[in-house]
Length: 596
Ligand code: SF4
Image (cartoon, rainbow, N blue to C red; front, side, top):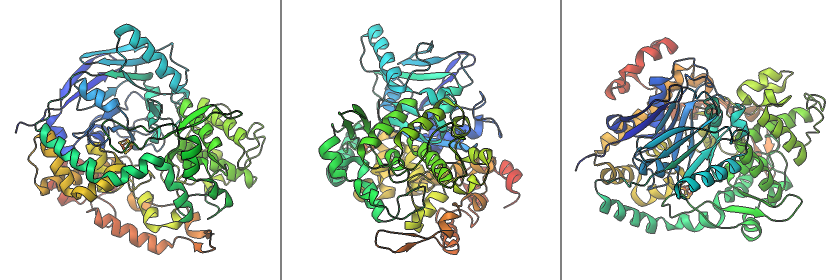
């Protein structure tokens, strides 16, 4: 069976040069998405580079399964939020358009455009176009305006657009990239990197489907998965991912008042049946996904309506009891407000919760906040503060730097209440309810992304660009190793043995870890959580105490490193690096951590 070829489109924004590279052998080693992104950063971003300088890259990574099991685009760049390598997933349809345009190896942006621009891609036609009329606009109106223009020009209604909002233009460290209303590469400041390159939007349309080596087998596998994995569909289609919040409050794994409490009556106001009956508009899904977990919801009535947003756990969890806001009306309003501004709801809600606690404790005053009365649950105060962050006005200029930098700039003892380890906000998650989740959060090399994203399985899925929500049903139907090998053979033509697959997963995982280590990450120093989780007891709804024990945490952390095939210190072993043809990382690693 002939193997697939993979082609990467590189655009140098400084010179305007466009090149298409054959990256087939690189894909065979690092798979794509997050794996290729880590390798790309290693090769192209100098150590110590400013994430907002032209030296940084912005890579829209695809993988061999993009479009079959979700249509993830994994965005990689050095993150302004953490100052280290960053990664963020965006589902939807952009990835499949890039593949149909001929760029199944992804899109790489380097350098910086001389003025506000957007990227236009229609199959082989690639242009850097003027975007001065879009600059300053909110996300949705930018996307609508651009689509309208392109439709007029080409009579083609099917362009897919990704854009940044004002927050990305102002280099806010937790600004995201949005695509088609409710798909976002929200995490780790990828929108700020796009803004720093003077790119407002990317519009893509592809019309040539790729020729996979064995499409019949692919259809057989997908048919089996759609049938046998339908149980997950039943639940997610109905309620989306909002449903997990209520369960998590009862498990004490969802944060309350910036993690000051284990229960509050406000928690019972989150009820997905109410969301379904009173707010849900329709169901939608990403390319070819049978689950369709996107559940947009609408509030029609004033004073907060009409407003429309997608309420998932990730974006709305932070705007719930963690800032003491009850009910879906306010969460819809806030979520759509931040989506339009181009901010990561999850990270910014962590920053706001931190400020609210500092205000409660008198460490920050109304004068510091330029008149904002930032009491718990005060919606208009939150909106005022968020707007200051998005435009870097007044105190917003400090808060826009996120939780790695802002606490030390603010000082006055506020640092203690910032719920982060490496700079990513631990927003709605409450680690004291589950030591396993506490570890899952702590051991992600790039920062505290939720959902066990530091583990080899997640990293491999982010490289394959399969949707993380499909991991469990895929595992149930095919088994973990089997799923990847079975799908990869007909999709790529690669003849993979189980050991080949194991090596690929190791390579992806190690590449990201080594990349972070080269930029100063020391796992045993950095894979920690704030002291609050080890020193302050909280109580669940039934009065049971919840606290983390530091010795148990450290013991489980070491066990987790070993289960990831790392040393007890969380470093990829040298012999395995050699086996994987990754000797090239060793000198730079030695420079950082000495001999290991
Ligand atoms: S499970 Fe949901 S997010 Fe994932 S691909 Fe399907 S519709 Fe998209």
